[in-house]
Figure 1 (tube, helix red, strand yellow):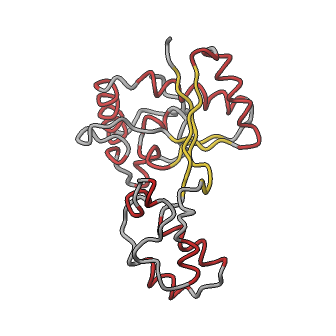
Figure 2: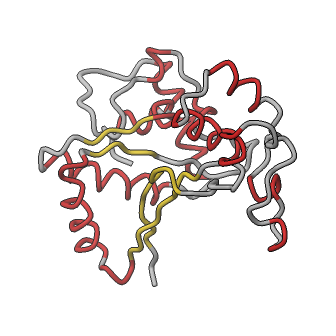
Length: 209
């Protein structure tokens, strides 16, 4: 990998040690193509003047900082690389990039042109309401005091709505056992849950074929 940031002198031992360790892990996991793919997109964004920067745990990587993907030096702020890529966890890291929404489509067009639309697929997630959140949202509409809402939601288990209310057709629309006494609870318990609240993260998948 090529160091992207300007270096005016020899690397400090701490920087060199950190980079060497990170690069060894990246090589063992075969992640260099992934890092360079993200770098390609961020570099194109910068070339076009589109704001784009890594966020979240990606800021813990010195390699991403040197490539210009992150603007945070992890050594300066004491960030551990393992927060981003921990070999003990056994899962691949995510490099989350914040891109200016007004010009995001420009980069999508670039991605399709760069690798071919037949090799790229968009992916996304949707945030849906589970029991506790649905209660709070409905209670706001009915002007229920927060204290009463909190007292009620504490009795709801931390499970998806389908597990709370039953997934068979007979139980569909039947009130939850904890939702029996107040009018707003009964209305809520028609299980308006599961509705899409907002769109979550988005991204794309690139494949060779």
